[in-house]
Image (cartoon, rainbow, N blue to C red; front, side, top):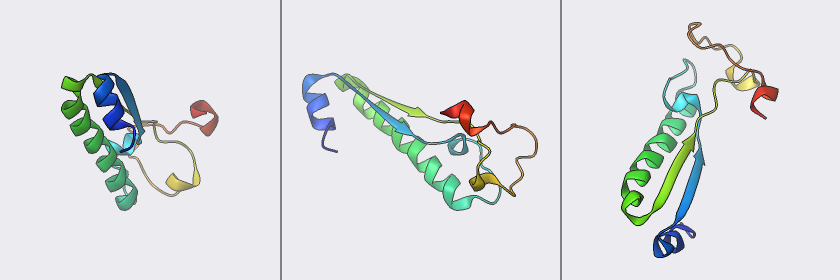
Length: 89
């Protein structure tokens, strides 16, 4: 909120938001997490459309499902194989 007005004034800038692949593909048992990530993706997409005429870019990074405690005990249906944390870092 603080940086955006200056970016618009300069007609240059890039905002990068971090979400998760859960922002596109829901993971059973993670309703709150998935909802939050969908919100980040939606906000980023809407803001990108709104800021494009002002020369400000908006991107959203969506790392894949990662073998962490967050997804332990969940089932992805085998469609997407989780990656290891060191592959993301």
